[in-house]
Length: 303
Length: 240
Image (cartoon, rainbow over all chains, first blue to last red; front, side, top):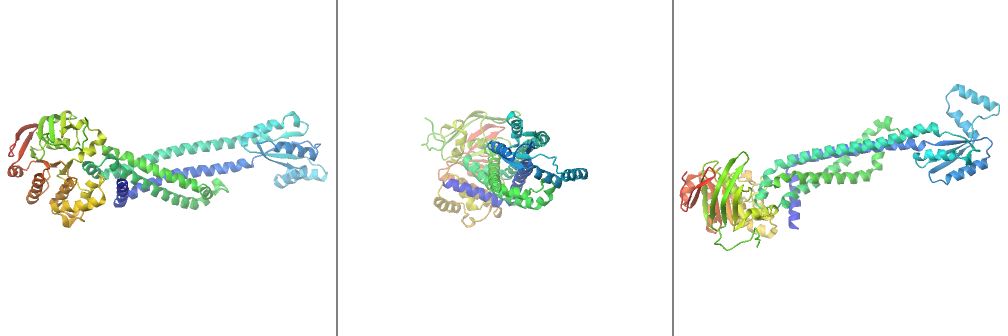
């Protein structure tokens, strides 16, 4: 126990006495952790945006004019019982016409719609607007809507028009995830190499100390442990610095990224994942610092 | 029966023995060739020779910092090459080492430098607080316990190194050119300390090319020349 206390004291003493070396090591570690964390944040924000778009994608089943509201409600109830369907809403013909008039900017179409209204006619169908729990289910829902049980009720489904958008969103989401993981792996590797190199320089500067430790009969564990504790301390210090830095940077640059992320604020994303970031950064910092210390000192333990 | 590397044995057994020891470095450089000698407990042995004769290489084998390419080194009858690598630090606690460049920890005080040798062995703080001032008094540095090495003269630094080498009561003191960086007065002070330590029963191996010391102390002298022992006299003089 006393040896553990002494090695811990040694580790902290080294950090304190080699101020500039400690500062350099913590800086490199902070930079590495910040790059990794920022990469994941940007990917998370991108994913948020894509999911937001995804959430707004729906398909509509257009009903024959002869279908009664009661039958429409019956169909809606049947569809709501399907687990892959999150929401079904009914848009009557009148409402559909009103919405279309309000949203269309083409003057020719507006004029045509006004003529229909004057004649008391409505060219639009009522519709059931269906939102799936996951976009991957739209294909199956589309096939269900084309089955014989609804062939007298549903005139058309606009799935094919939205299919392209849905597929593209799914592809982008998948790409974003893969890109994030690849970049993350690359930056983690770079971080490991940078930190290891910096710690090695620190160890090299103290090589005479290790020689003395060996000569007075310090066991390998006794020589190694202070470096391990040092590494842990560096990791914790760097993690805390990273968290503060990340908070400041995301707060400052969020307004400038609105063109990319729209209503999704990078700072808000950071806050959303705050505890995950704190936890993972601490773990990553401690592991990186500790492993670097353990590996870098090995050469000084050899006879 | 396996013997603990730290075990003490009664002695008609040499405390140290070299049996046909050779050390060849990469590039076929022969640092030691077929060196055979033994040292009894309590002896004071000077190892002399020109620069490059193999003195330091020989001493490095005593404290297991290097291993022979042929032959065997024995400590208290135990072959050093039978000690597992992770147990070598425990073997080294039988040996106290002193070097020409002092090898002190620059960011620790005199007290902390000496205490370190006890700390690594897990000695309680109370024991350290008692023993370190005593040993520093023996070497004449009791007033400089809170000084850092850079605040000391060369002779004082070497005395700190000697105190550190002695604090854990080793069986053997290995001194590799301990006076190489010192003035004549400091040189003689260090040698007198080594002689005093030897009087208390500690075996001393002193590597030096200081003719004056060797001739004056009139103890056993082993002379090395190009890695070979060319002379081994009980009351020898420096003759190369």
